[in-house]
Length: 269
Length: 293
Image (cartoon, rainbow over the protein chains, first blue to last red):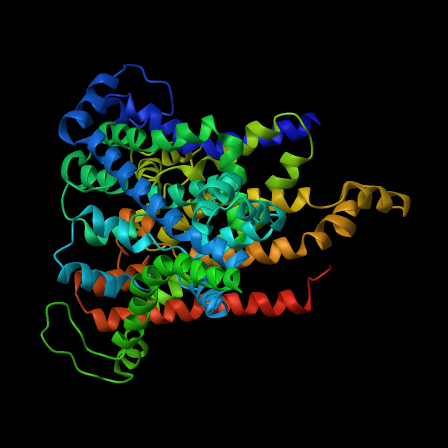
């Protein structure tokens, strides 16, 4: 089994290569980067210079904060819409349930790029371009979230709900006080899927955002590259490290949850 | 009776918020895209004309669009098989022993959670023709130093390599989920029946039982690579000379740079049609071939 570890280590180093060189370049002075030496370890450290330049020129923390607001806002509304709907579709009989479920299945087929043009026209018409609303609103409804919660709630025992009803609980309090606390595995899996995809999204922010004020981390990297960095690869890599770090740290702290979250949502989406 | 009526009201009320959001943010905009595709609407124009299939005719005649479709197919054709076989290989290798399993799973999965735009910038440095470490290494070995992202011969290849790097860990995780679902007894049974080596076990048990997972990963990989946009927008802008122009980037440029929304909507419909066709093929094959239950 020595061979297994050796092969894995070799492939692992290969996959990590972009990270190693990114971090290395982010602490090297420009002159050293331009010598294109093959030594990954810097001869001179210029970390303060490179990172200082990024922090002085662009509002890094503000980009990260925007990322948190946008991802948090999207997730909050997704859950607010999808949890009750998923419960109703799984456990309640009401007129139009068949149509509603059909609509969810139809929604699963449509990639987010398809409604983008009319949504852009609408946002522009309402003067909402370059705002948190424009960044958040289009993703608040997730057919996938409704589908996922419906599947998960279908497996909840009916006895649990009957007992709650006998205790005199209404359907709404059942959703928030009985169903949701039992839905954590599905909710965390979906939350990870949602945050990873929206934190990394470039397509929609590129369309609706115009300045630094509402720029997400992905746009922040892009702005820094086109406005400030030029050929200064050291500072550019420092910016890339700063913007990549938060989600990567979250991943390293909760690896198992991330992998399981992406695996369950990936296999159903 | 009262309970049933109460249930009906509660059910309707609970789906109502999602229903309204679905209508306004998903269904109507999607239908609007379908309609826009048959008009000559440009952003800011006060009127729009119904032009039937003219947008689609223009697409067929437009050499740029043809190049974009061809590039997208080449990209999908490179990224899908390599990232699936690579993902399967990694999953088998990582799952083959207990030692280092969690560590290597995390390593290969890292690109999935890394900010694509930032990593694209890192790749730009890595693949830089003169100061990039890749070419520095090639130079040290006395080999040629290609212009990776700035030559039309290698740009798609370079983007595909980045695409594989991004998605191989994702596919690995999906295959791992499929592997853990295979009952251990089947391997013991195969051994009793004379399957000795690792390859026999793979051929007789693992591969057939992974059928549904593989089909699933195939579809999802094709759709994901069909959506390639970030790396193109950051690194090449479709260049040099349209050599890395891909479907969603063409749609983005037509719609949001040239403001030709009608034409852009028509391209979006082509994209949607391909996605739907892939999903349809998947369900057809799933019904016929790879069903075991």
